Amino acid sequence: MKKLVAVIVVLAIVSLFSCASGGTAPYIGDGNKGMSLAVLVPNPNGLPTEQNYLPTMVQGVLVGDISKYSAIRVLDRQTLEKTLKETESGIYKNEADYGQLGQIANVDYALMGNITKTGLGYAMQIQVVGTGKNNIGVTKASYSGSCTVEELDNFTGIRKASLELLTQMGVVLTSSAKQELSGAAMTNQVNAQISLAQGIAAQRSGNIVEMMARFYEANSYDPSLVEATTRANAVSSTIRTGSLGQNFRNDLAWRDEWKKILDDASNYLFSKGFVIAEVSYKNLGLKTGRADYQNGTMEFTYNPYNIWIKPMPFPRAYIKLVDDLNKGLRATGRNRDWQLEPLNIRRVLSCEGSFDLSVILKDGNGKEISSESFEIGYGTKTLGFVVGFGAEHTPIITPVLIHYGNMFNFPFSEYLLIFPWFLMEEYTRLVLPGEKLSIGRYIKYDDGGTFRVSASNITDQMSIEVTANDNRVRVIQE
Image 1 (cartoon, rainbow, N blue to C red):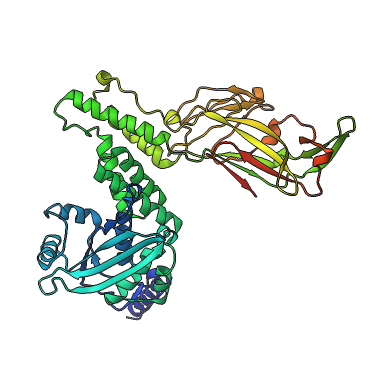
Image 2: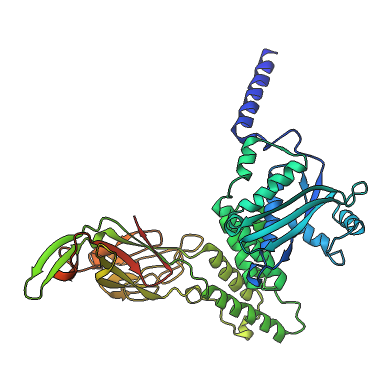
C-alpha cells in the first residue's frame, strides 16, 4: 500500500512539473471549447495583382492564431476548400447563405471580411457570424482597423485582429498569450505563411511550378507548419509518380504539358536571385608603405587575410523542386521517345560565372581614393568555388580547385570525393559551402594588398570598404 501511495505521489509531481515546463494553456478556463469555426478568405479591395496572395495569408494567420490560443475547433483550410466547392458562389450575404455554409461545413460560426489597400497601408473589417440553426446571421465578434505595410508584413496588424476577436468570442487569454499576440511573429513563421499563401494563389491560377516552389519554401522555413508540410508532401508525391498531365487525351498533349512545366521551372528558377556567396571582412589594418617621390604617391597596405569568402548552399526548396520534376519525368516512362531535357540545377540557378570583389580606399568624406579588384569565379570558372549541397550533404555540381587563377575539375561520384592533395597541397584549395576561406592565401603580396595614393588625396582619416558587383553576393563588415 505504501509503495502504491509513493507511486501516486511521484506521478503527481511529474505531472506538476510537466505543466510547469510548457504544458500550460494560453487561456484561462475552457478556451471556448465546443465552438466550431470556419475562417474564410477575406475579400480583396484595391489590391494589385502581385499581392493577390495577401487575403489567403491573412486567412492563414487567423486560422493559426485562433487554433493556437483557444480551444475553438477551427476547420482546417484544406478541408474548407473541399467543402466550399459544394457551394454555388462562395458569397455569403444573408441568413440563407450563412445557414447553407453552416450545414455544408458543419460549423456554428464563420469568420469573413475584407482587406482593402489604402494610401498608408491596409484596412481590415472582419466579423464572426453565426451559421447554426439558433444563431444564423448573429454577429458574435467583429474587428475594424488599419495597419501599415510593415505591420502587415510582420503580422502585427493581423495579430491585433486575432486578439480582439478571441476576446469578443469569450476566450480569456493569459498575460503571456496577450503579449505574444501584441507583437510581431517570428521571421521564419512570417516567411512560411507568405510562401504558403503564394503557393495556394499559384495553385488557384494553375501555375504548377510556382505552387511547388512556394509549398517547398514554406515547409523549409517552418517544418512545424502542418499545412505546409501536408501540401508539400502531397505535391511531391503526385509529381514523382509522373502522373501529372496523364489525363490528357493523347501522348502529344501529355508531352506538351511536361515540356511547359520544365520550361516554366527553368524560367522561374533562373529568375530567383538567391545568395551564392557571403564575403566578410574586419580589421584590414591600413598601414603606410613606401613613398614614391618621383611620382608624388604614397603606398598604403591592408591585410587581405582578413577578407573571407563563404560559398552558400543551394536553397533546399529549389533542390527538391528540380529533383521531384526530374523524377516525375523519368516516372512517365515516355521520355525515351519524348526526348525532353531534364532540369540541370547549375544552369537553371545560374551558378556558373564570376564576380568582381573590390577593396576600396576612401577619404574622410567617404569619397573613393583608390581601389583594386579580384575576379572570383564560381561553378566551373577560374578561381572557382563549389556552390551548393544536396539534401544528403553531397555536392551536386562539379567541385572546383583553386590554383592561383587556374581551375582544375576532377571526376567524382555522388557520395565520394577523392582529390590528389599530395600533389598540389601548397597551391590548391577546395572551398565548400559553409566554409570560410581567406583570399589572402591566393593573392601574391609579401606585405598585403596595396593602394597607391597621390599626395593630394591623402587625408587624416581614411577607411576601407569591400564590395561585390553581383547582388547575389552578400558583403558583411564584422
